Structures are given as C-alpha cells and as structure tokens.
Image 1 (tube, one colour):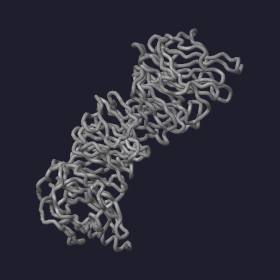
Image 2: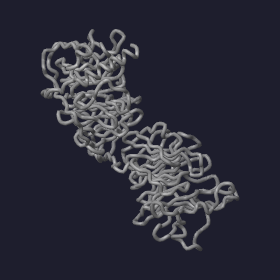
Image 3: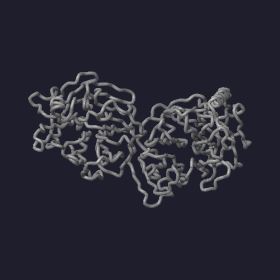
Length: 636
C-alpha cells in the first residue's frame, strides 16, 4: 500500500473517530464465572473500525443477536499517587513465573512468601494456574479463562490469527477473527469479553474488545481518550487486557496502568513503564512483566507494589490461596525457597545516593542532583550528623600520583561549605599519625558516630614494608580505635568496607590474586564466615567468583555478587536466600551497596581515574540510573 493511500486511510480513520458520538450508558457485564452457552461466532474484524463509524471505514459483521455490552468508561482519569511500600507479601496473592529456568510458583507463607520451582512441564513461554491449582502451559497459548477456555495464536491464509477452544481440545477450522483491515496480535480472555490489540495493515495499532455475545465495542478505550491508530512510542497505550472475571479492563500508558472497572478510570503508577513487555490482570492485582528484569505486582485497590523475587513472564493464579501451596503438576524433587517477612522499603525519596568523581560530590535522588562541592573528589560518605566526609585521593600514592597529605579526610559541614581537614577539627596536631588514609564508611554504632578508615604506611621497602591498620574515628570526640592491626600492606588490601549499625564490618580482602570474604565485629564478637554464606574460603583470579560482599546499614542482610547474580541472605542465618540477576549491570562491579529496594554499583576503585560511572539499579523494577561520578554509596 503506497504512502498516499496510507495517508488517506489514516485521515479517514481520524475523521471517523472524531465524529464518533458519545457512548451510551450500558449495563455492566455479568460477573458469572461460567461462560454462557452460545453458538460459535465468526467475526470479520474491521481493524480499528468503531461501531458508530464503521460505515466510514469498513463493515463489522456480527453473528449474535444479544444486545449485552460492557459499560463504557468516562473520559477522565484520576491518579492514585506514588507507589507506597509494603512490608508483607499479600495472603491472597499467588503468581506463576516462567523463565528459561522453567516454572516457579510464588505463594504466601505467613507474612512472607514461598517460591516453589516446578521441574518440567513448560511448553511455550507462559503458564497459568487454574482455579483448582493445576498449572498449564502450551505452545502458542495466549490466555486461559477460569472455565478452561483458551486463546491460541496461529495463522490463517498467511496472516496471524487467534483461535478459541478448550484446553486440550482440537483447534477449530475457523479462527476467532478473520483479518480484514489488520491482524489480531494479542488477546486476553474472560467469560464475558475478549480484550487485546491488533496491528492495522494501513499502519499503527488498535485496541480490540469483543463481548461474548459478538458485539465489537471499544467505547471503553475511546471514553478514556485512546484514539487509534496508535503508534509505538513509549507513552502510547498498549497491552490492553481483561481480568478473568471480565469486571476489570486495564492497559499500560506511559508510566501508568489505566484501570477501568465500572468506576471512573484511574491510573496506577508503573516505574519505567517503557520496559513493561506483558500484563496479566485480576480484579485486585496486576502482574507486570519487564524485559530482562524481575516483574512487579500492583495492588489495584491501594496502589501498593510487590516485587516478584525472580525475572520472567508473570501471571496471577486463579486458584484460591489454599490450593496453591503444592501445584498439582509439580513432580517430586522440586526445589523450594522460603522467605520471612517480605520487605520492600519505601522509595519515596528515590534511591538517595552520594557519589564522588571528577565533577565533585553529588547527592542524587530521583528528583534532584544536589552538588555539595565541584572540587574533584575520590571518595565520599555521609556522616550520621548529615555532613559529608570526602577525600581528594585515597590510599597509597607516591611520585607521579598523589601525596600523603592528599589522603587526609575532609568534612563538608553543609551543602556548599568548604571542605575542612577532619583531623584538624578532632585531633590535636601532635597526635595525628602520618600515613596514607582511605575512608570506608560511616554509621552510628552503639550511639557513637563512627568513621571507618584505614591507614597504610610507607611501602618503599616492598615485602618488608610495615602493614597498616583498620581504624574507627569517633566523629564527636576524635577518639581513634584500632580494629585490626596488620591490615593490608604490600600487594594486599581490601575493597571498600561496609559498616553496619550493629558494629559488623563486611567486605572483601585480597592478597595478590586471591580474594576472600571478610567480616569483623568492632567489639571483637561474632562475625559471619564464608561458610555461613555458603561460599568458598577464597577464590583465585576470576571475574565471576563471589565478590563485592556487603551488609545493609541496619545489619540485617548480607549481599554479594556471583557472576551477574545478586545474592541476599539474613546476616544471622535462616532459610531465606534471595537471588536476582542484575544482567549487564552486574559485570565488572568493584563495590556493591544494598539499601532498601535498590543497589548502588561502583565499577572501579578510587585509584582508577578511568573507571566507568556508578549506577543505581532499582530491584523492584529493574530501572537503572547512571550517576554523575565514579564512586557511590547509598545514603540511609
């Protein structure tokens, strides 16, 4: 079809939509869970033709004589506001996740969840759990209703088509829709209506809605301002879906989920909506599938969000919670991972992060980039009183690099203030020990504001050079306490170490090419070991070994990377072991900071001027934000 004809068709469609009269008030569909008996329909699909504008474009052939339709939506939408956090997995929520690893069932367990891996049985790229608890999958399966009726993708006469028939049944000769002006590409099923979208031969996309009595009616979308043909821009409406009951219709539009359930349409926020690739809908929840990242469940009643603990295609179970603990298709030998209270800390401030680099020191959130200083800095941490401790250079330098005095910690008391030598503020001049200093972290431990730092001595004597010390500095009194003697030294050292409010210090030590998990308690008490984490005592020179060990600020969780997978476990042990693939963001990470629902990834050490910029990755959505510096830490 040439460009001129395309233009004429688009103009025709635009005029038809503009001239469409307002949709009348129509009754809501039945909420029955069983599809009414009816003769098989054959709909000649006229693409984006509307009931009131069909004569201007093409014809819609209806084979039903019932006049039952779905009530249209009003033309206005309301917002539920920002996504609140939730701290428990809902007791009425079970989801099925399909990935390259197979099928996983995530169901409630106490105030947390239990993730059960179902070995085998996956066919196709999606699976559904039926009301009785059975999990089904099949090649070409698009959707399945509570009554066992399924929609399958297929082909007819060289074009895409959708077929409707019972699970396990024979494919009928005729598809659900005969394409005339386009092709149906994605449909979802309920006992009362079928909702989805298609592509027009003339270009663009259109929403589709067919009631089970054969009425083609997209007034729900028109009433909400959706006007076909639709383009492929990120903000354009897409993934039109219906819940299994038929009571709720929703679609993705930009960074929001527009929900129409017989009341005024409302918008539930979706972070990073452009990466949403699939939507599964229930009356109370929506399952968001993202490309190469874990999905999210949205509570349509409250706007709360729940991160899915693994990546993959997500669907909402139609079974009662009591039927989902052991799927009927699960063979013996399936593996189960359990979690205590499933916590998703709030992100109202948007991943607060402090980052240092060539452009200075920035405090970054989703809403701001506050520059504390424009002077280049190698490292920065936030002190418990809100001031910022920085360094112009870190660690051992020497001729051609930096001088010993360049490593002195500096305090920036408030935004825009000049950096002041911290030792000059806290320690009498005669008591300051000369050395190469590196700041690691700061936290309140036992009511004391402490800075964790290390001091190295002159290493010109090679192997005979003295080793350094790991220290804490009280930011109120100036008291300096030695945590470890003989720390670091010639061709040995550590990653950035992380100090928790419990007094545990966690990180990674290295001795030439050998790396190992490191943990120590400031009071000399218990500290976790590599065996407690289930990792080896040490590793040789490799890029995908367990590394970048860290601890949360409150000391409740340990985390590390293995390859590109993030591992999170309780510090004091337990059954919960959460893993999440960070994808390319997990490659080359030198330091990991875990805080709430996000991780901060630093890709180089402070002495590497060519290190890539640090990145924040939101665990609930998979969003990534490139930071304006190379060394970053999460801010509690």
